Length: 97
Image (cartoon, rainbow, N blue to C red; front, top):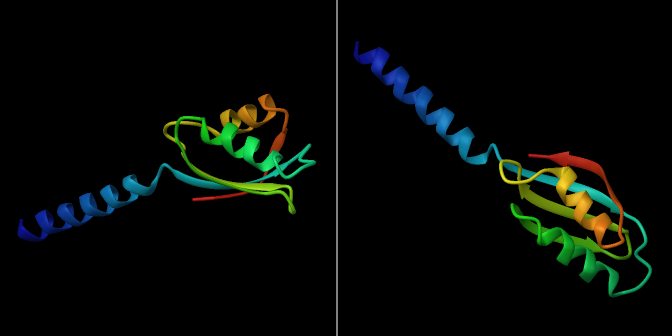
């Protein structure tokens, strides 16, 4: 009985630790129409305004953005729509947890 209880506690701890990190996603996006030094500021502001987005780094030189977000609160589609709505269509290149 004691061994069964220990196993149950271990399983619960493992499940809880995965649940804490399950929503965190990082995606690299290519961003179109960035033609000046002010463009990355607009892209960052548009993407960061999406609830659930926790970090946005935009590179004018590479025409890319790296976005970290909680997939329980938002989606990749919502982020790309926000960017497109600001005049900068974006599409995913790479995504990781």
